[in-house]
Image (cartoon, rainbow, N blue to C red; front, side, top):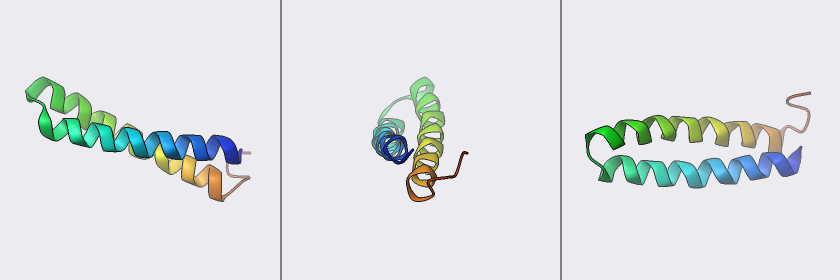
Length: 59
C-alpha cells in the first residue's frame, strides 16, 4: 500500500499544480472544469498521503 500511496501522492500533487495553473490562465468554461479538477487532485493527494504514512488506513 505504501507504493500506491506514494503514487497517488505524486499524481495528486502534480495534477493539482497543473490544474491550478490552468484555472488561472483559461477563460470561463475551462476555468470551472480545472477548478473542480483541482479539488479532485487535492483529495487524491490526501488519500495518497494517508496511505503512505498510515499503512493500514484502508484495510
